[in-house]
Image 1 (cartoon, rainbow, N blue to C red):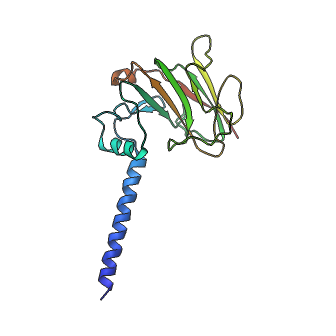
Image 2: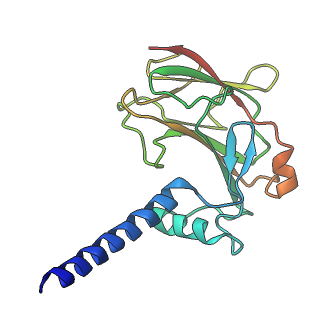
Length: 193
């Protein structure tokens, strides 16, 4: 007699938990549609606008972070090197090339879930346009390693995966045609532990 209500209740609980899990999975699987890729860097220029798709809006609400509007700037993320291989925690990398035109920019190493890395105090995880040393031709060369390096260096957590975030503030490239024509820095893999 209690068998049918028990089976119905069990089915409802499974469907409810499955729905929550699938919604969370969909939010984690994408940042939304309309991502623009330039080399290995991806940006979502419409994520903060009224034209953002429902997945991007839900992702933004789930993050709980204030994003830059289209006129304020643009955030590019890189999770792979120039050979389309994921950035690995035990490897050294060199970011080289030119940063697109912007009034100001920052480059930082973060956890793939956009959380700060667990980096020892005194080790740099962020560099910006005012602190970077440039080559004579105006290009930049930034080393990413868990061990201190000479020149421009960003520390990575040896126990965690990471990605790079390049934030361009007040950039003239916020329209779609300008983004596709950009030249972005390349990420070259070095030695691995």
